[in-house]
Image 1: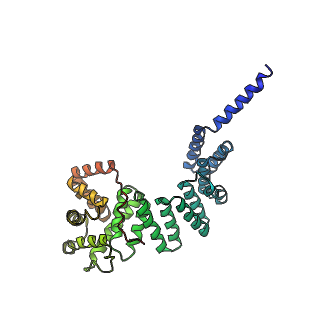
Image 2: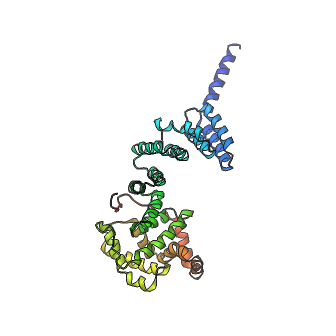
Image 3: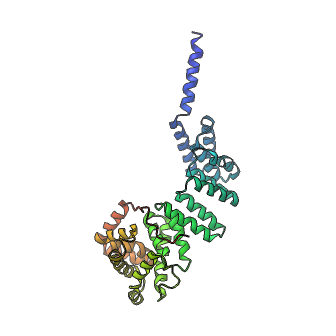
Length: 341
């Protein structure tokens, strides 16, 4: 019996060690810590995660959560101690670089942050997230030209990620360019349809259409060497007289854009397959394009008028609203027509 007891104790110890490293145990630690973070109790989140790491010292998920908890608690020194080791790991992921980037930005370590993003993008060259955040860092340094290059690259390599469209649309809105704020802004509101940023970009879209039609010479100072841009502007130019007479609002834009879609598929669709215009055509065929234009431009132009429209066109509104909440808008690769920056 005296020989059996140490063996039992040893087996018990092994089982305890295995239990401590079970994925379920890590998940439990993460859930507890995340609940504390949701409550704003970052100190307790840090405590729980540090305890969890005592038994799972090399677990990347716990380390990421700990670095993020330190970040939320404004303890950037300890957060950096944890996160600066991430790039050296074989299992490093995009989120690891994101967290490290957030900490570098918080302590304004610009050189280290830029170096980190460049290394991260070598490892993950198709990450829209990293291109977006690198662009935002460059923008904060007032390096606008390099910022838009990152956002454009993110759109080209990871067309399903919304953040690059958001930043690129705002960038072009403040330049003489009349096309890309419209293109990128509308793709954004379809990728990210119900956020605070959506309302912001809807305003950008409405103002960008006013900007497009303000100058009688629509082609002036535009990148007409780009055949996609030229086709877009030539198509829109045919609507200038109508807009000049009736102004820019949800109703007139619905009429203009209906004619645009019909002309685009008659003349340009084979040369320039484009998911956004395919979606417009789908909505036209389903009788929902007017409702869609009201959703995009009516809410930005005159909210009370839009609310009145939903009441007087309740069937159309309900049909589109149901469809909108149950569809997934995806942008395929290979439809990048911007001039390379």
